Length: 298
Length: 195
Image (cartoon, rainbow over all chains, first blue to last red; front, top):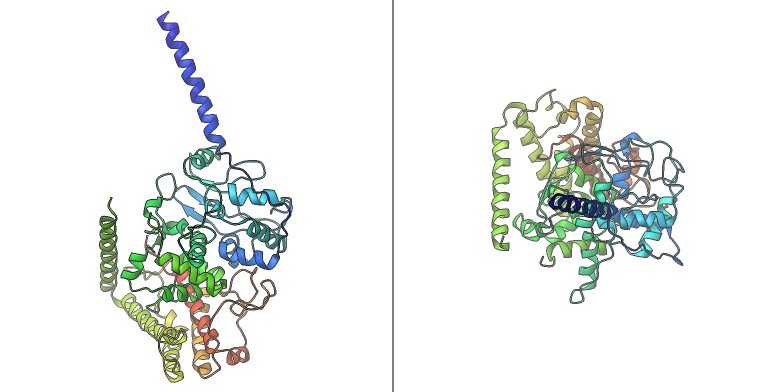
């Protein structure tokens, strides 16, 4: 009798365990955006692309294969990621996607089949984009020439290659949706906050990550590790000020790549400037710098 | 951990990193030391011009020319001769310098060309660097060769270099940007960021 009781208990535990695992790997059930009625604008979308670093990551300039036709290898502790071809090519790019597919990818980290993207694709940041920005970006991405071929699939180390694990990761670490403005702060500060925590995805490199690759938000911008083990410096207001940086220095550096001591950015930041922040409006650079120097208290 | 403790640790970390950097610099000898000193001269000349370009100090064409001459003197073979194959000890240089020597040499040559152009355009009409004007997709961006949805800028080192006439007609601010894009492209591909 006692033995049977243990068997039932074990079976029940197994069922609960499997059900929990099944629930966990499905990932969170966030609602998609309702984008109906919005018209995309290619020029505005191109600007969103520059805010978001799409071109820097998804283009291999040296190969000459074309804009958004796939980027170069990103080496991480989990293995190598290859930013895919996102030109309108129907087989090798995203030419057969719908706007809703694009929106789900950007804001929920889901591919058209419902599989979870690895967060090397910074959708935890792009989820902060507004509806109109998503529609505009879609228009811009569709406007580039379709290119065939592309980089190889990701090459991840065991056990990180399982997409199912990303559902669990999302349940633990992913929060979807736009940021609510902070009413007590100015419009430019709020704009800077959205830029930093959204499209510019500063924290993707400048915030350290835990063993599961999630950002440690209590150490936001305290420095991290970039592609290939590159050491990424801290950009907290305290550290920047200790190093003699001012808001104007940061704006100039993001526009030109020149740091206050006359040195130039190298590493991935050089790419961020040349393919991204250089194109920002003065107002957006100023807003970002304002936020970086006066962030909210964690 | 208290915020003050964390800040203290950060400040300490920054100080240690600075000290290690200084130590690495001090440890270098021979050609590696020579090129590190060479880069410091280049950096200082760049700062002099950058401060004028951004209005931190008064724009003085003669000082721009002087700094541009110093930068040009550090381009081309003056630069490449300091990178004998395999000279990596106590160095920030990456091995890719020698596996992609053509590109490294081209960037060094570009530095010479752009710095020389800066010297010649120092008296041209100024046009402070700002966001690109014109249509986002039209290619009219002041700082790009291809517009908002093009890749590259000068990062790839494969862009068509402006003709001598085009360079001569540019505002010094734009020429200076070309100088710095060349430096950034070189740092991106050939300078080791700390691991």
